[in-house]
Length: 363
Image 1 (cartoon, helix red, strand yellow):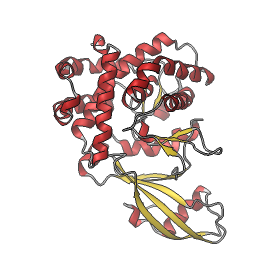
Image 2 (spheres, rainbow, N blue to C red):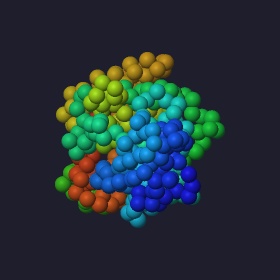
Image 3 (cartoon, rainbow, N blue to C red):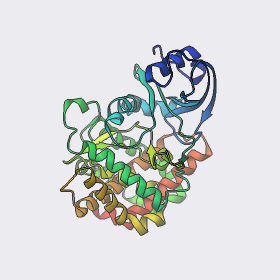
Image 4 (cartoon, one colour):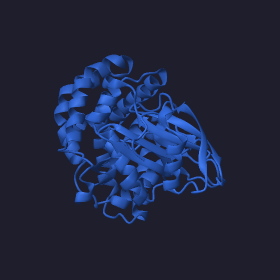
């Protein structure tokens, strides 16, 4: 498929025909005759650009997809630099090639995932526009959160205690890795600007813990990197979740594999509940949701992970996630009003969770 196109406008009918032939989505006797492309998901992501491709065919193409989603690196220079620092493009391509096919967790069909060099990648996915996409500004309901933690358990349970081998060395560990160092340094560099950008939503008691939090961050990372570890999706927020609306749909599926790490699975649960779930829903149901996660893990064959241990991990992870909030709120260019809106809600919800769970005691 190389050389890879650098943008949706560079995708030719010949190239996409070859992609679909190779993925088995298009019979050899059929070809793509026309492509119409349009931007997709403005304000949803920050590290990539998405476009919707509408395809016309010649030949026997009754079963071929009429639309596809294509993903490219962001055109924003600031955000692309952050993406390269965290190697998110390489991690996403390898995840779609090596992790997604080996997990029972629902995923859109992947027609192509490839990268050239450090930053030129293309991912072509099944179009999920007939699903209902989550809205991080609105926040997840109890039902949505429950579907999400159960799907997470399918991913985590598959790789539970099995990621120490060399085949996973491309994926950083939660602590003592370049990713962990970047998170620490990124949070430190972004803290003041995050507080300034979202001044109304960052209380004084959060500002006052800066020194203690940054000093404790390596210990939080170490706690979340103790056995048994699994594959952590790393960006399990509501804008990346899709909910089925038709009988043939998955109940829920998810995308965006730019930040996978190896660590304790409850990190993903905390990320969802403390930054995407409606605060009133989290307050009323978080213990029930964690129990649902544990029950789903047990259904995947995981044993020996008690509620008390999971709850303590959850509190540590909620506090840890503040470094992600500061990194996003203080360093990334949101580019539009919706980007600002979901970051605002992320900050507000994470602050509330830290306070509700007495997470400062962990410092």
